[in-house]
Length: 306
Image 1 (cartoon, rainbow, N blue to C red):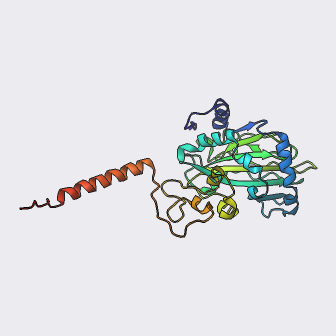
Image 2 (image 1 turned 60 degrees about the vertical axis):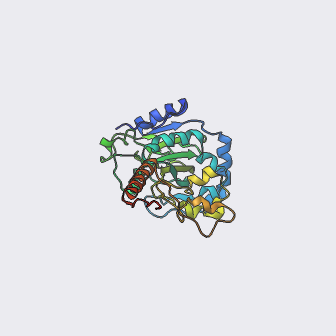
Image 3 (image 1 turned 90 degrees about the vertical axis):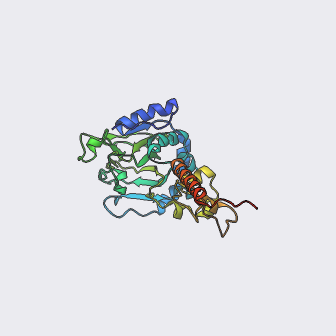
């Protein structure tokens, strides 16, 4: 099944989505200025230096990872809200949700000697129906040059198609070689993995992913960004990290959007308020109208004065 965009999109988004939906991935060059990425890379130097190597064969024992990147560098917000990326995310995920949320921000440093990562599909963490929807959109932003020698991401073209989902890797993967400023965009159903670092240099990158708004995200966004932090985000960013409702009433706080917690003095007592999908609201309105009509029909007629 080829995934079709849900909404009209710009010419640039149309071009990249055609590649994404056909191949399961696309590499968008020069998406942001290289100098922007270099500045971000420098801001993360200290955190990379302090972060220990991962434990376990999947994360990689020659790999460092850390998340909650909006707390590490403000400029990460510009990558999260990149207009073209958000437009692609809306089209890739919007058919199955009212809104999507931030699933993960993670910085990754692959050191020399790291073996290739186990090929995997990120959407499999939810164990839902595999061929009926897309759960996730991933974006990898290189902080250093990605090359075949230093562990550039490996992607299996076409592996997102239903016929390929239950098969072992078919054919050779492509090596997503790219420079800082580019973006590798791929679906959660696309088979991929980090390559082996056979060089003498470290490979750095950031992965930002977006998931359906009714899923539990990989990274617990509310612990990463509690209200004391999230109230400094603009409304769009706060909504992306989860301070919003997904109708009907999913993710509510005391029956309202959790965005109520981002004010200076959130109230202690709140009135639970309907937040229904249009079809649910229409069904409810019809039901209430029927109930009113039934009550009117059974209510005794008013007696007139003698």
